[in-house]
Length: 550
Image (cartoon, rainbow, N blue to C red; front, side, top):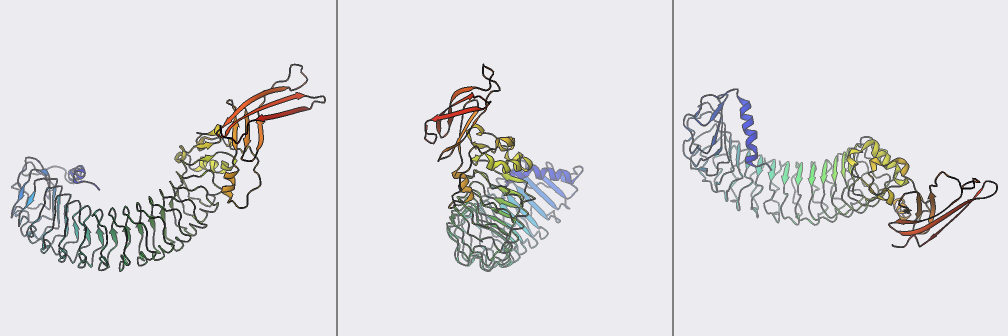
């Protein structure tokens, strides 16, 4: 949220663009286009005399204004917008705005104003927008809005309001926007919002809510946006959102929710955005989203989810974004994202995924961005992205990639389509490739030195590949490699120097090495000597169990 002080440079720049030169104004104010007046400076202690009578917008920014008394703007009959920004000592006396029926917008932000009299606004019958923000208001008097019946937007965020009179909003039958965020409000009176039948936006972020009164939102049948984020809600009562059939956006992030009833969102037939991020959810009910067919964006990051129910997205044909980052997902059910033809963004990063089925993303024909970073993936099935023609951003870093033949297809895809994003995606094994960045890895390095044994039919393809992944033992020069798995050592590769023996009869060779890997150490010796007829005899032997710990 941007503070009033942060807005000051933008406001000054805007005013400078509005007029080509300053017209006559009471110093130290500046006038633009004859209708916009900007007054700033600590030397301003009161409302300057001689303000242009045809001014429509008037700004007081970082002044020493104290009391604004009755009739202070009596000369400004055309005034439509009045802004007080960062005037710490400001106080509004009864009748401060007189009978200014032309005033449509009033803002008082960044002051030490702690209370307002019910007579402070006079009779502002045409007032549409009222901002009383980032100040020190502690309470609102009953009847404060009795003489502002045309209000459409009321912003009270960033104050110290602790209580609200149950009928304080009763006169505001035209209100469309109400922002009570960032106040220590809880609890909220049960029937506080009953008169606001036309309300479209309600923001209750960070107001210390621990519970929702039963049916508190039911009268708000025009509501399109509801923000309940950054509170302490541990539960949502049955029917919490009953009657909100027009709701399009629901913000529930950063609460203390541990579970959700399967029907809690069933009446939200027009919901487009649902944010559940930063709660304590360990599971999502299978039918949670059946009543939200128009859902376009789902955010459920930073929870404790271990999996997602099969078919939870099955009716969401308009879904474009799914964010499941920073959970504890260990696996995804078969067809988890089936038929999501409009999905463009899928974030699965920072979970505990070890394998993915080859068809996990095959139906995601519109997918553009995929996050898989920070999991436990060692390899991905060949061709896993073959159906994703629009996929350009795949984040794969911080996984324990095994850079052998099983990663060849993925490494080639990264080089062609997603190299910059994966410049920090590294091999963790085999040892001689550890630390190599996948986009820079030569394709010829991606080989399997051990012949895979028979697959265990009880394992999934990904698990079987992981089980037979070899340990590769190397000499420091990299001229000798010995590949072993948990059962046996399968293949020895030796790069011999191009030389013959001293007799000239053919190649003769005799040498031994100590090879090391993260699995342990093995000693190998090789003797090759020429035999009559031009054939060669090869002998090799090793000591030390290659599968033991060092």
